[in-house]
Length: 255
Image (cartoon, rainbow, N blue to C red; front, side):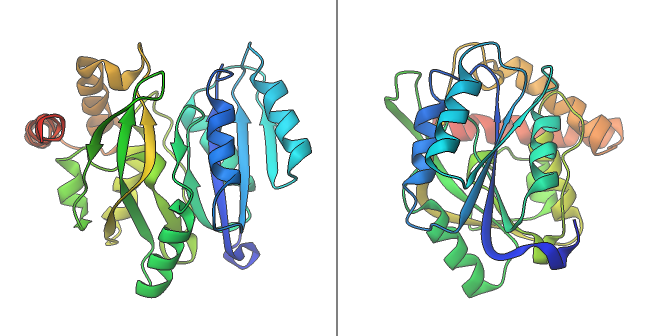
């Protein structure tokens, strides 16, 4: 999409969905309650076999700012997000998975911050919740992070990111089975941009049993593949970055 076609001030929210009937309504409601109302929500049903598509359709009838894409099969989060990005109309991109949710001021806070400082990439602190929605650990974030810093870290939550395409350009996520979001942030930062952390908790990340984030060894392996396949790092440097990643992951869990 040509930059001139993006709508100034509009936030395009990308939400992949796969068999999310249990939690997707809470995710959509958290968007509809936003104090910042210049948004469109693009929900990509990635081949769900439950009632997710019906719930998406019912919400679209309530609010025409909700757009729906339905994939024939389960293609994965990267492909789903890219489908959403390809039709996004907004100057800003934000990301929310169908089992997570936001604070009501999330969009307003980030748009205001980015306009005031003329920056293209922000992320925020967030809090984990269990499957029942009970609040757990708060994940604090640094005030800023560079490409080299993120290579050795795991601190940017996808559900907290906002990008200004007028500044960072259009984006597409690499076709990885996992960690495609981190690879995308690294691609942006590698161009010389900085990511700015907002300290207020404005997003809530649900840890679901069996998910990648609940299996730490799977996350380590996925991160290794991201270093080698997406970022094309030599093995020795990928090993160095992996040591930093694991150290910071432990710090995040403890502190």
